[in-house]
Length: 295
Image (cartoon, rainbow, N blue to C red; front, top):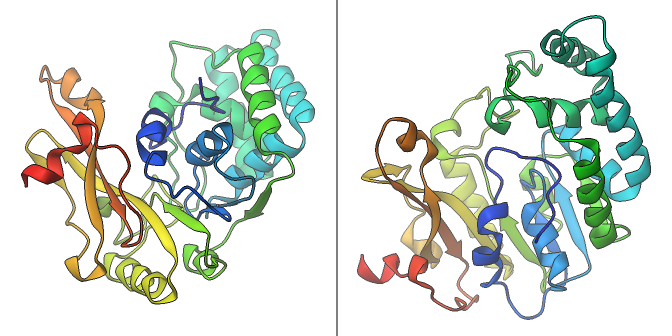
């Protein structure tokens, strides 16, 4: 099983196998300008697809957390264990302790504190206020991932990626400029519904037209890329497709049942769009990827 650092809303861990089956056979570096918790890079490393990675995210504490996980796993495990245990030793209840840790993190940006918060926030979803401070609430039903499980995941991720990663916290356009022939860029930008303006789920969104222009630049440079970009749930479509003049292959991945629809008593399946740049040949077409043949 592919290890993951923590539950994280928007993570591609559950569909990583469907994504990487379309990777070229030879990859120089795998570059993730919107890496999140690096689910795709972890899966690619586990399968030995490349041994060089660039991980970037505009969310600096997230990049610092990944860097500590990969380069200093013992320190992260020990610090997380201490923070996790203190919720039971504290003079306040465990819920109040969460908010105390959140206040401390917003001041210090400490990666171990961030990991604890990610392990306890509602639905694994990070939220920020207009000052860039984390303001997501605590999941009152649980205490967060146990240290033993965190240790297993952190050690596994570190063993896969240590000494193989360059870390950045920059605008995605700057990171795209680093790509060279033979590299593969995998992009999982924020959904279009959050892209035009600042959104409390992200430090920064991206504009559709600007993103299309950057893809056109990659085409002109001959850089291979794959994009996870919106999709549909039931009859609802999320955002508009990328334009035909980019010459992309458009596939769909079955991402499973919609949790939100289930809460409302409906059974709906979410399909995520996957775009392949023009030189990439699609991998095995599974049942979940045949939708584009029917459109």
